[in-house]
Every structure is written in structure tokens, then in C-alpha cells.
Image (cartoon, rainbow, N blue to C red):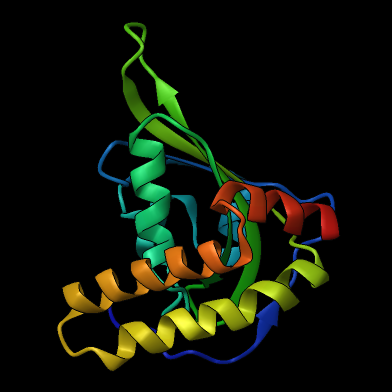
Length: 176
């Protein structure tokens, strides 16, 4: 998958749309529903077996994905606002709910993500935070150090507002 030129065009989910995808433990897509494929401009055969990052938008802070992966690998669920990229360079925002899938023995065997249309108030609140986090990541040449700095900045932000990440997400969801 080569570099995709971003168009700046935004797509919007209908309030009743649900995007569903499932991945294996390595983040490779094993299932994508029709809405996933249609909004992202992919045919199902183009995404199956591909890393879920196939729809990752460069304006999405890496520290949020680190939080997401750390949380679901621990067997917990996570809500996050995510900007995704289509095959042709458009973008769309979602409220993602990522959960671990479990094998018969209780071990984590993969992941399911259900995404819905985000509320406008929630996006208005999350965009400035994401811009700040991206700025921190971009300001440090070493990508590992940039990621670590943005993780610290996210934790510092949550400390300043006195709200854990999951409570912030629930507050934003309630705000719409």
C-alpha cells in the first residue's frame, strides 16, 4: 500500500451507521462489514489480511493508538475518537469502541471494533487535544521519543483536568 495523497474532503457517517471490523492479535483484519468497506473505499478482499492501519490517518496521534492497544491487550475495552483515511485520501471521524475477543480458555484471541458517528461537541473538544499531541510527536525527530512525549502529555492533560481517560470519553459521548 503506497502513500495516499490526502484530499481534505470529509465524509460523514449517518447516525444509524455502524462500522465493524475484527482483527487478529497482530492487528490484521479478519472481518470488515459492508459499511467499513463502503466508507473507506475498499473492497472486502483488499482489506482482509491487511493491518488495520490501512485506514490510519496521519493526523491521528500515535499515542492514542498506543493507549488503545495497551488497553485491549490487557483484556479491557476502550472508547476513542479516531480520524480515519479512505483508500482515495478522504477522511472520516468515528467514535470507536474496541474490545478484546476471547478464546474458550479466556485468553485474548483478537479484537472487535464497532464505530459510530461521533457527536459534534465531542469532536470540537477532542480536535485541539489531538492537534497538541500531534505537534509534540512531530517536534521530536526520534519517533519513539516523540511517542513517549505525547503519551506523557496526554497523561499530564488528564491529570490537569482531573479525569481518567475512560471518564473523559464517557463525558464526551454524553455531550454528543
